Amino acid sequence: MTKIKADPDGPEAQAEACCGERTYHELLVNLNPIAQPLASRRLTRKLYKCIKKAVKQKQIRRGVKEVQKFINKGEKGIMVLAGDTLPIEVYCHLPVMCEDRNLPYVYIPSKTDLGAAAGSKRPTCVIMVKPHEEYQEAYDECLEEVHALPPPM
View (tube, rainbow, N blue to C red):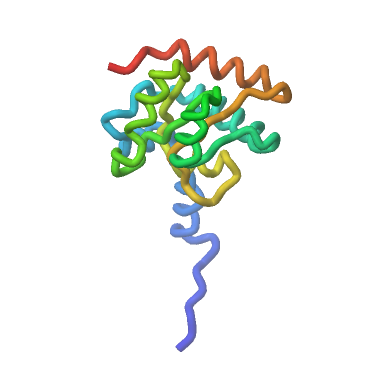
């Protein structure tokens, strides 16, 4: 038996190429009910850029355990949570911790994209971006927009 090679110009190859990345509105379908405040499409892109800059400077905390540990130690930064994480119980305590310590937090639609922005193939449900002088302007812009979002119910 021989394998039949797929036609690189066939309709299946074209469908894969166009649907490789889902749009912002397609990602909103999978959101948790607790995903408030949710970042707009524009803010989501800015946060991804800020995360990429922070990774180069090693100024991020990734994952629930690491982020929780450094919140308890008193570290400051923007908390970025993925809105499509299930079960919710994995990270539902983090927004409460942020509110107690006056830390800004925001939800974005996709944990896969959040992991990719952090330079990982693995999806990530929470990242803390710490301030640093190398990307201070981008950080301040994101911080200002996160503070402008309406508070959760």
